[in-house]
Length: 170
Length: 298
Image 1 (cartoon, chains in turn cyan, brown):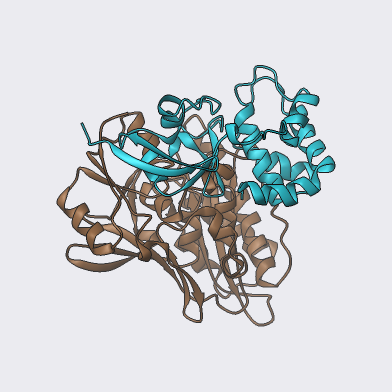
Image 2: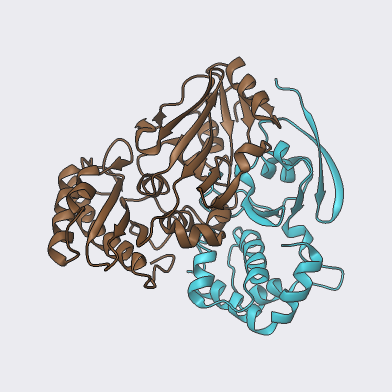
């Protein structure tokens, strides 16, 4: 078996070390080694976006990243989104707009939406749909998700322009 | 997933040495969006993955008087985020905007798309029409191969054991030129091309005649196909519906598609003609300095 490696990352703002095999994906390490089970496994081939995390400021499918590649990287997962003060506005918008049913896809949608709003705080519906194209949902039919992102964008533009920068999501 | 070793060399020399040392049992890892999945499902069985993302030569992104240098590991989002590429190598930016979703574009590279050598690769027709040349390094030194000669079959290419793709070199954009890439998929996004067509055109100063043109077709042959005869026939011709329709007919005659789950041969031939016309018209519009609305996802 290939030798295990020690990988040092900044995970949700904290310097974190983990031990992993080269063949382990970032998704596996987050869930199985770090017990951060908020990030979900869906298709494991880059189609569904359930495992979306922010790696060095960009959204990626963590099932298609080797954990060893995260050496020296900053990683942000769904566990890093809410603060002690409560849920993030995008989380509130998903809750209030009932933009989820079974919830498996939700962490991925939240990560992608939050990142997207930090890049484009005033998106059109088309832009939202295109930017969420890498996230699949089998329950909602997407309309409520799109409306939740629109809602978050309208109500919390200032938040996304200021806070996301501080939280390091871009 | 299969057990493998991981190496991340920081110099090109070290990478070449590693690739050569593990002759045949190593695979280069760039974005991994194809490779990691292929290892997971057992289609590829490497003993070593060589991460090439830390090598400076593979991250080169230079646009200047001598053209464009695009390192093999430069990512899709960097391509469409680069003003010089968007303005002068527009077809390549068109391709990179529609490869996967945003998450894939954060990781996938144009060089990786080429080395994966899929017949439906979205960026390869654009590389071909833009005249890109692949710079390949190996134990015997460096050589160059025109991108239209790079792929040799589905998943196969000219890379010899021990060799790796370093960068893609593009000539300077000609005056009065424009380019475009477009594909047909039954969804709005996140799908594999049923047919993809890239075109680049150079017009005369009056912008009413073709000086030259290059067309490449995706997903209609075992490799991305340089449809040289289409461009050759357009050279010197006036720009009108008749010459464009003739080009589309030539493209249909060159395409050799198969029937599969994404479309029948007959449908693919039809789409090849339709897209060739549309893509040529968009490339002409860009050569004339007109805005082309190629909204992503449509």
